[in-house]
Amino acid sequence: MQTLDLTKLGLRDVNKTLHAQTADTNQTSWTIENAKGSHAIACGLNAPIEVTVKGSTGYYCGGMNQQATINIHGSAGPGTGENIMSGKIVIEGDASQYLGATGHGGLIVVKGNASSRCGISMKGVNIVVQGNIGHMSAFMGQSGNLVVCGDAGDALGDSCYEARFFVRGKVKSLGADCEKKEMRPEHIAILTELLAEAGFDAKPEEFTRYGSARKLYNFDVDNAAAY
Amino acid sequence: MCGIVGLFLKDKALEPKLGEMLTAMLITMTDRGPDSAGIAIYGAETAAKTKLVVQSDTPDIAFAGLDTALSKVVGSTVTMTVRSTHAVLTLPSGTTAAARAALPKIDPSLRVMSSGDSLEIYKEVGLPKDVAARFDVASMSGTHGIGHTRMATESAVTTMGAHPFNTGDDQCLVHNGSLSNHNSLRRQLRRDGVHIETENDTEVGAAYLTWQMQKGATLGEALTSSLDDLDGFFTFVVGTKDGFGVVRDPIACKPAVMAETDQYVAFGSEYRALVNLPGIENARVWEPEPATVYFWSHDTAPTSSEKAA
Image (tube, rainbow over all chains, first blue to last red):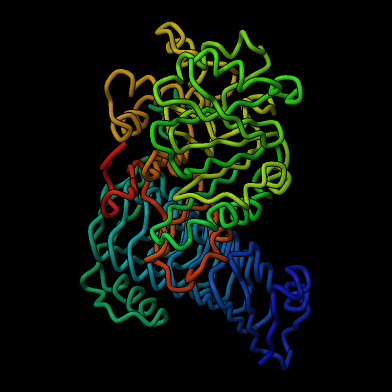
């Protein structure tokens, strides 16, 4: 295992070292020490490596991630995993606002709670949260799955497209054009797989599915004057 | 952007280090705003005395003989401690209004930074490290304090546009965000006779709270009504004589992180500001909820509603 001390090396050298890893690297396991809430740790990785960050992180940790697995041993700041393409980010603590914003793929697991705007404009990322999520989560969510083992805040899924939301607890309120949906066997299958991948012991049958009522995003001639 | 820090000490042993800890926290937030910086410190009170902190861009002239002149006005001894562009005037309790009224006649360049029994506000244009150094904030002791580093968006970079803003005796406010209805609210408050000095949005927010409290609201009630009457983005931290409060607008896009241990309650715009506090590894760390008023007071256990102003 390789260890990088962020205080000693500085952010650019730490990220440069991780960016230099290729698909066939032998150095697949990395630890970053002294995170101390710094911004942009392990951003833009593109190799099948595993990075463990010791401590809490600031803005945009693991942003634009491809292939890599990033473990955050602490809480994560705003915009963690923004525009994630693939790979996995596991947050041991809580996540701040706009977790996984615009994410195209991959998986983000939060063992604590996630804050407001979790999965905003998600485009294929899967996000699994063991605790609760804040208001305006999955706003304009286009595809992917947001799984919440606890409760969801106000305006869940406002103006969403085809992203799916599974919530075990209460939803404070649904956003515009978001509605409760039937749980069919294919949804149970998706949820079972995501919960297993996240390592959470929850029964898929206890969740409720929400998604788009599809009234807002198709052109309707009656609304022409509003455009 | 803007960066805010706040520290409320539960452990008396840390009080001599308040200024040093707050300064370090604020310097970490420099990236969030390089325009001006300020710190409000709640220090020791003296029986039957109160304080007025004044500022002048020409301190050599304005502060010369200021204590003597004010002593005549209030009919009792006024003592003065000069720190760079600021002077801390210690007056007999109950003479603040008379002293304030006399200041423009003594020297029109004098501007009041704060008034109160324990509160002292120091603020100037410049980076947190430079502002803290010129007032030697690191040497100050106290029970609690708040700090701000500004990235100006709504008005000019000046001393009067720097935070914290004094909202009443022993009360102050810092703000991260921008208010969008400050022009109409300023006109409305001025019509009601509220003095607002600058075109700054936060000054209007501060004046709004003062105005609400003059009408009889408690600070907690004033903050709650600010959620209805102020339009725009804000995370506010307010200092009171025995504690501090935090409120975020309902959208809550301006960041806020809090940490609590047996020794302190700390606030930072980012977790980075808190990383060097003692025992932070085991602190309870969380984000304050939107549209919720929080207060911590030395009088009682932490609550989400106000215990004392």
